[in-house]
Length: 179
Image (cartoon, rainbow, N blue to C red):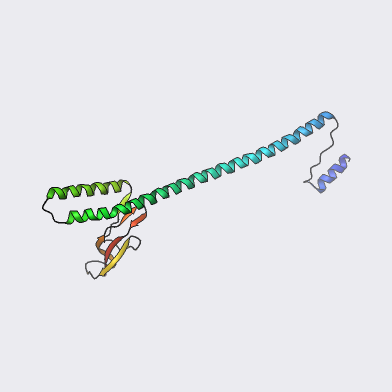
């Protein structure tokens, strides 16, 4: 193929790669080395891409694992605290009951405060209800009453306290709603 023919082919099909025949053994070795280098570059690019993908997958895995672990911790913590809430309810009833032994009552108050402080340190908060608007995501209405002193759908009385851990409701507050 002459030089003119090579140019014609290139103009007709510019994507076609045309190589000229090596004239001696050295040029043949150089061409072979260039081919090997091109193959190594392509292989290197492929492996580099694979490494980047694996690193991204690993980062996503770590994030997903952390999120699952936090969710599991919160779930387990919520389950344990749900079992403790009736104890708090009973201690609150014991504090409200009348007794002749003031030292005994003070001991119950101290235990109740210590238990509530421990829950607070672990992210558990009481749901504020009395005087607040009724919110079905936080409150469970057990009764409705007419009260001219309160607005519509305002919590008049709390029958049982509700608790949250973070944004999750552990137990809805049982309330009596006005109007």
